[in-house]
Image (cartoon, rainbow, N blue to C red; front, top):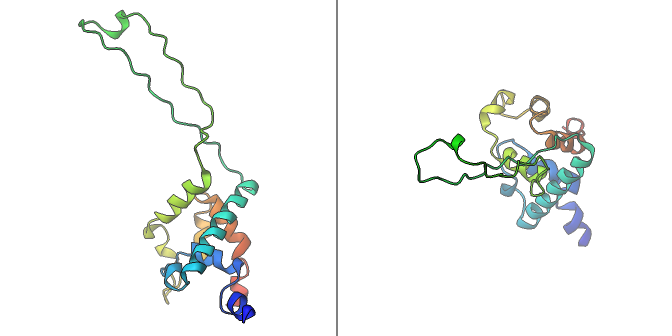
Length: 156
């Protein structure tokens, strides 16, 4: 009973990741149970986090903040006012930036126009061609796809 419930009647962990991140048109929530869907999301995020260690990611710097200037009640230009000594913006990396969640948000908002050309005559998405075409936009997803979906053609 445990064998059937835990292994036979559900996709493997390695299969849940491509199921969750697939753009085939049917969301994973439509064919996975709630516990399977939650596990798939956890495995998906974990795989993306592991991919950050092996994928060259650009360092994102925090946006520079504009220092507010004190307004004068006189009608004179700013150049005539004494300098206030506002601190220069620093180019330190933003500690709140999460490359995984940023890429996940972009992946979820990916418009169908970006990949509709990869559908064949039968309505199936050629995910291999799609991932190759958008590999520079989604380096973490491309890495995870290479790791977990490389066997799909052999099974088909």
